[in-house]
Amino acid sequence: MAGETVLREPPSSYRVGMLRYAARPFSEIGHIARLCADEGIAVCYFSYRDLAVGATRARGFLFRDGAWVEGEYELPVVIDNAPPTSASQLRLWQDLKQRARLTTLL
Image (cartoon, rainbow, N blue to C red; front, side):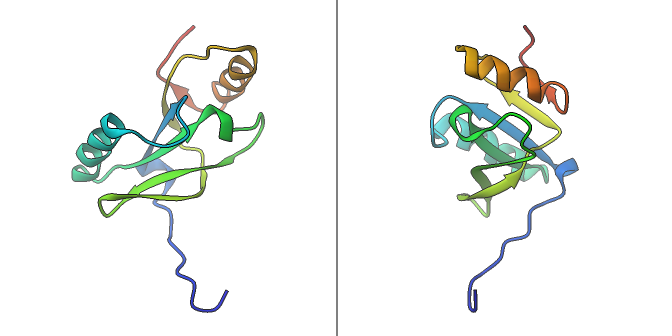
């Protein structure tokens, strides 16, 4: 659309994903995102509820210039994930582990 600002995503090699249960990032995740930003690493936050099996992109939040920017983002190669607690989350986890490095092992 005319006049709309388009934000470029950092390359996936410079991004880390945070996969959690909550729909929005919370303060602890913001602290981690600020520390990563200081090192030139962008953090994307995703909720299990916003992922789909086989998807390469998902609705989430990118920490940019000190704030969370909601949008649709490519899933990073490295994802710090909360362990799955339901059958649907387990299916997502199993799918993601084929394409990304997850921090929670089952």
